[in-house]
Image (tube, rainbow, N blue to C red; front, side):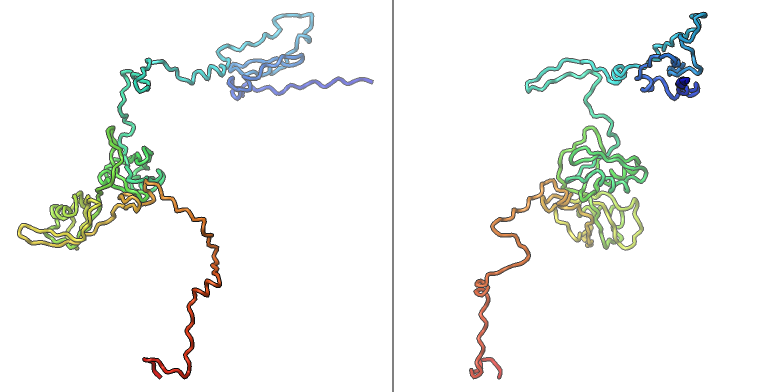
Length: 367
């Protein structure tokens, strides 16, 4: 009975030369796995020009299969050598190239208060950079809302030619960038805005800007003047009327509209603590006078807690008062009120006694 010889092991299909780019030299699988020793009957590994190791396309006979009659050393395949330029660099070398090397500039000196001080080189000057150039500083007169709330309120107005950006600068001020120069100048000309029940003043950023806390005492508001005569329907007449209630700023329109119903709206800076009149009187040099009804529109909100203008109670910087603790001497109300019978009888009024039938009628009664 003959014993069948074991079937030969079929090597895997080699990688075609046109697909060698799929496994470059930097492939971690190729770089990390060491080459397996070539056993008897296996195909030796070759190295492509790109550095990837592939098997030979044709089987190469081992030394045991070469006839002893022709031991030619030229027929023995020479081991492939990978050039040093194609070898992958180690992780240490890659990590070292990421960091930036620092140098010691000078030695610090300790001052009297114990703080180390060091002199900066001449190329460094501690001045404000121009990073925030063309930014608006929004100083809130109270606790400001979130940047998302400010963006949702102001972007439909200021961002018609490009979305604005809102950045937190301090606890009471934001940095706002308006990409359109015309819209930016318009926002600066108005100067006083509202967002989230809190008023803020818009200023153009500069290196020496003062962002200290300030109390809102004056504010520009719209004032509506009614029953204006034709003699006062001019820029000089508008300035005269506005001077009676505050400091004139500008009119509603860039030019004087034709006289129609005698109503004009002017921008005036007023003092918030002073009482606001409902009528003003304008007198000329001849003694003639005219009375003009006045209506103040969109006055800044006033806080009910601190009494300052510019914010509501929700945006006040003062902490909220804690509620009074509930006394433990009295039980909590459960919805049903009970009363002692004796106390009820003592507190209830005594019903009047019935009048006898034969008793005489009282004075003032009708029989």
